[in-house]
Each structure stands twice: as structure tokens, then as C-alpha cells.
Amino acid sequence: MPEESGKAPLLELSDVTRRYGLREGFFAGRRREVVAVAGVDLAVGVGETVGLVGESGCGKSTLARLAVALEPPSSGTVRLDGRDPWSGEAGVRQGLPRLVQMVFQDPFASLNPRLPVGWTVAEGLRAVGQGSARARRERVLELLSLVGLEPEHARRFPHQFSGGQRQRIAVARALALSPRLIVCDEPVSALDVSVQAQVINLLADLRQRLGLAYLFISHDLAVVGHVSDRTAVMYLGRIVETAPTRALYDGPVHPYTRALLAAAPAVDPRRRQPAVLAGEAPNPAAPPPGCPFHPRCDRAVAACREAVPPLAEVAPGHFARCARPS
Ligand code: ADP
Ligand code: MG
Image (cartoon, rainbow, N blue to C red; front, side):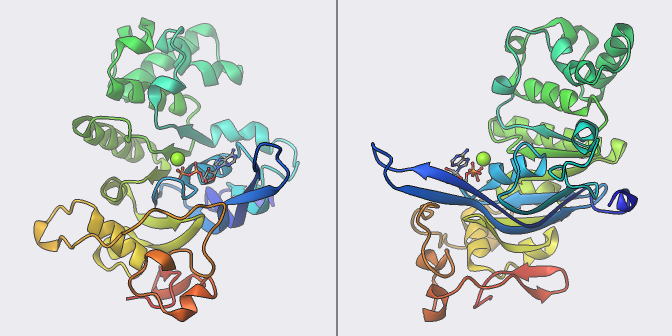
């Protein structure tokens, strides 16, 4: 529905599921599947930052690839600026680079080691045939300055930079076509703690200056809480709790969120609780029946083994998928 464009959220996932087939055993006789993302509803509005947090393997990167239309959902709908990139509607996929870009965890792996960074930053501009070579050079200098780098950096190669500077280069490349949404998948997880804050501050500053929206993904609650207006907690492919960030951090109701917060080093030591997140995350190819968190949950009752609870509103704008929210 193109007439909705502009009013719709920049990103809207409706009941999105992504399955992967797995070949099991040497002769691959049996086939099993992993449900990496299961029935996710998530929206990111214009200028908004939504955080997504959860342990390794819970489906965050899969959700990121779905959000930027690198791969299609198995079921459900992805809409970017009100349009479904998988509908076949003319022009929608071609318009995506100007709407949404991605920043990955490891800037070294995502930058070509053999190309001067100026060339890499201009990659998107060349791909859409935008501007003369001279105009592109000027845009590269502007982008480098926007991310706090110097004009002479354009001629250097990725190995000549620190990790934090390389992530700045990846951000400059993502900004080249002035997208409105950036999906950041663990953007600071590979960086030293001291450098993490600098890159987070850069992203926050760019948001102010450019009116950007972010889907900000991390396994680190402290990082997500620092940058997000709203936070969603994911467990084994599902969103188990979502709320305005302050409400979620001040009053988590899902036992998993509470456990994650207790396990994270609290800023205020008086609020530290003993970690209750015992045991490994379950195997996504063989999830436990009912609520997938019940084997690790100290509040679980018989009903929790039977059915996955719905995502219910526990306070205005605060949703939790738990039969016994606290
Ligand atoms: P996270 O980013 O939270 O660590 P991922 O989205 O990478 O989680 O993975 C979620 C689950 O989906 C994992 O069990 C992973 O093994 C599986 N998975 C992800 N991508 C693929 C793929 N291309 N093929 C098969 N399984 C996959
Ligand atoms: Mg990941």
C-alpha cells in the first residue's frame, strides 16, 4: 500500500517466523528444522531506537537479516516504510539501500582489506550510480568527518586503523546513501570496553543530527539500555518481554529478563541480585515443550510445561510472555 508510505513505521515485522532446514547425521536421512525466529511482532518508528537483547543463538542476527530483507521470512510479513520487499512490487527492493542499512559486529571482516577505506565508503554510491567521481569523493570526505575521521584517512587501508576507527568506517559506509534506519547487529561487541562507549556516543550523536532510527541488537543489556527508547528481550526465537526501556529495566516482569538483569553488572551495586540464570540456553532444534524458558525458571509451574504463553500487556506499552509474571 504505497499511499501509507511515510506514515507507517520504518520497519514492521508482523508474526514473522524464519525456519532453517537442518540435515542430521552423516547420511542426512532425517531432516529437522530450527525455528530461529518464531512469530515476532516488532516495529521501529521514524527516529526511534529499538533495542533487541538476548543470549547467543536466540535469533537476533536472523531477525536482523529479515529486517533488512537479506532473506525472506518463512511466514509472516516484513514491511519497510510500509512496503513488503518480498511482494514483487516494482521498485521496492531497488529502493531499500536508501531506506535501510546494516552495521555488523566485526568491522574487520566487513571491510575489504585490499581497498582504501575511501573506496569502501563510496561503495553504496557507486552501486546506485550516484554522482560524478568528484561528487563521490566530496561525499566520502563529508562522511568521514561525520564519523570523526580525517580526510587523509580515505587513502589508508583497514589494517591501519584501530577497531573503533574501523567501526566508524563501517558506519560511514552505512550512511553514504542517507538511509533512515540502520540495523546494528552487535556493533560494539568486538570492541574494547573503553572504545565501546565512544562508538555508542557516535551512534547517539548521528541519531540526533540525522534523525536516524536504529534497531540496535546486542547480547549486552547495559549497552542496549543506554541507547534504546524501547527494548525487546528475545528468548529462543520469541520476544518474551518488551517495554519502554526505563520501564523494562526498572520493573522487569519476565523471569528471563529479571535473570538477565541480575546477571549483568549493575551500575548501582545496591541493586545487584544473585544471578539466577542457571544452565545453558536450550537447543533451538529441540526446544522444550510449553514456555521454552521453563527448565531454567524458578517460578515455573505445571502449566508452563504445556503451552507457550501469549505476549500479554502487563502495563501500558509493557508486554510479557509469561504465565506467572512478577
Ligand atoms: P544470535 O544472533 O542471537 O546468536 P542467530 O540468529 O545467529 O542467533 O541464530 C539463531 C539460530 O538459528 C541458531 O540456532 C542458529 O544455529 C540458527 N541459524 C541461523 N542461521 C542459520 C542458517 N543460515 N542455517 C541454519 N541455521 C541457522
Ligand atoms: Mg548474532
